[in-house]
Length: 553
Image (cartoon, rainbow, N blue to C red):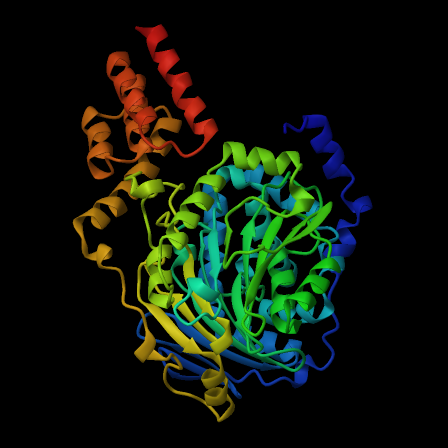
């Protein structure tokens, strides 16, 4: 959608009357904050404590965070203990923003637009979470206060994930998840696995936090997260309720409401059954479309709660012992939804759904090790080689993390870098909270004997080639966008590094086209078309370049 210059002026000149000033000045109730202990003790480079709260980095590079108390106490302890991790994430996020919007004038407009867009965000966030975010925000970087004050900026960051979903055509997200039980698992208990394919740059995914939270209200829970993030994208509580989120096709919203990660966090903290999770979701207004997979170990089942700004559905399989979720909706409420149908037709969601069905159905007696193997799978349907990094794969080699849950046993496995290919670290929630409640723990709380080894693939030349291809791909795209002429050697190197990937051939074709070598351009575009092209718009783009090349011959 294009916005006219006049409309932009009208938006900017009407900011004050649209409630922006009120939202920028809003603060939660922080009475008593001056009495909260802020004495952080640095025991070593990998171990910090603040009262009973602590932060420890394990051998796999994962930071293990323990928090307790009321919202303000948790927020202050979180921000204080993880301040360096928050700074790392803020820099990564803002650097990515600057890369995407290099013009200072456009960034100025973006700042005004973000303020306008989020003008009512604070009205849709529970007071408890506003207090917690405020506590965290005290330790943000002052250098970004010109974009928005610390607390307001942290609120914005919790909605940034949703904006990434709304801009799904840019493929910031493309998550795939599954649940299995009864005859599909080795012990008959519920088993869930998911890849969280949210990508905001390599720096953003460098540092990960396994947070274990003991709140003054609700249930104890864990979530896999990053510095400054109190919302949940993947987590499980001590009642055996697991929560993961998968983006749905969304139209671009014009006002922020409840961020999905905070809705998922509320379910994680307060639900002890799938029915309670549904009721919590019904009571929140969201501004993007999302499928929330909720698993219940005690009920031995998983459901999908499918939410959007104007619709609500619940999907539960009948006469089956497996549930698959990618990035389209399955409940009756969305069967005739035009946007959902378009996502199925044009995106790679249906392909990944079918591939996950194929993998889960074809794996006998699933256990955590087999679940991890599925999450790491890089091939297409029928094991076709579709190129490394293809978004049609379950493993797109860009995931922030992979995670596996056994809710009945309150056990979870989280991936370490790189992507979901590093060692999966095991945690037993009951044992973890017992350890923390007995005082500071100057070591990892992981159940290391049950860790799942790293993938052998990351030791291969193919993986090294892929990592080189990723860097080359970014460089080539930037240079092509700036009309820089590239060599034939660069075109061939792209193909050599990732020969099964359609985009490697397409980029080579673009290089030849820009060099006016239209015969070779046609050859390479046709080679790209013969491979597993990611989406329908991508295929149309290839066909367009073939026609343009022929016209030049």
